Length: 339
Image (cartoon, rainbow, N blue to C red; front, top):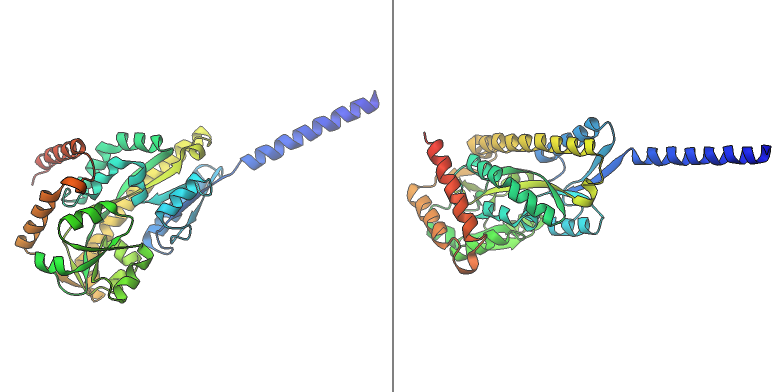
C-alpha cells in the first residue's frame, strides 16, 4: 500500500511538473516579422517601438523578433517563407497587393492628389481589404501611407520629352507601375531594391521613382542630383500575420497586438508626413539635391496622359467597378474638403 501510495504521489508530482513546464513554455510566443526597411532607419525605430509596445502590453506573452534590411529576403521571398512557416508575418508594400488585390488601386498613377486622399480611400476600403487578406490566409493589421512617389534624377526633367528620355528605376516587384509607365511611353528599368543604387552608379538608370523618405532610408538621395515633385502615386505599406499564428494567440493578446498596430499606423503616417515635409522643404537641398520646379503645363500633360491610359487593355490595375467607386469617393471628399 505504501509503495502504491508513493508511486501515485510521484506520478502525480510528475504530471504537475510537466503541466507547469508546458504552461511556462507557452507563456511567451515569439512572432517572427520581416521587412526590407533598413536597420537604423526612422521606419526601423518605429518598428522597434512597436515590438516593445507589444511585449510590454501583453506582459511578455508575445514578443516580436524583427528581421530588417531584407535579411530574410525580398518581399516575394518573405511571403513564401511565411507560407512555409519559417516566418510569421511581414511589414511590406508590394506583397500586400498580392494578398489583397483591391489595394492595387493605390498604385494607379495620378488617382490621388494628397496623402489625406490616400488615407481616406484606404479607410473606406479596409473591410474589403480585411476580407481579402483572410481569404489569402492572413490577418491584416492595418495600412499606412508611406507618401508620394516623386522623381529623383541625374539631370533636370522639365518636360514630357525629357521625362520620356530618362531611364527611371522602378521596383521590380511593382507590376502596376511597370505597366502604366510602359503605356505612357516612359523608360522604366525594373530592378530589385537592393540593386537600385548600383544600377544608377553604373549608368543603367538616370534616376528613381521613389518616396522621399525611402530615398533617404536607402541612401539614394546621396546619389541623385535633382528632385522633381511630380507625384506618380501614394505608396502604402501594411503589416500582416499568418492567420494560423495570430488565431493561436490568447484573445487578450490578439486585442493588444491589434491596438499596438493601430498606434504604429498613426506613427508611420506622422513620420512619413513630417519627413517628407522636411526633405522636400529644404533638407534635400542641404544635401546637394536641387529641386526642379514642375510647370503647370508639364504637370497637366503628365496627369492627362496617365488618365488616358488608365484601365486601357493590359494596363488594367484593378477592375473598372472599383476604380469607379474610388473616383466617386474622391469626388465627394474633394467637395467636402474644398478650400
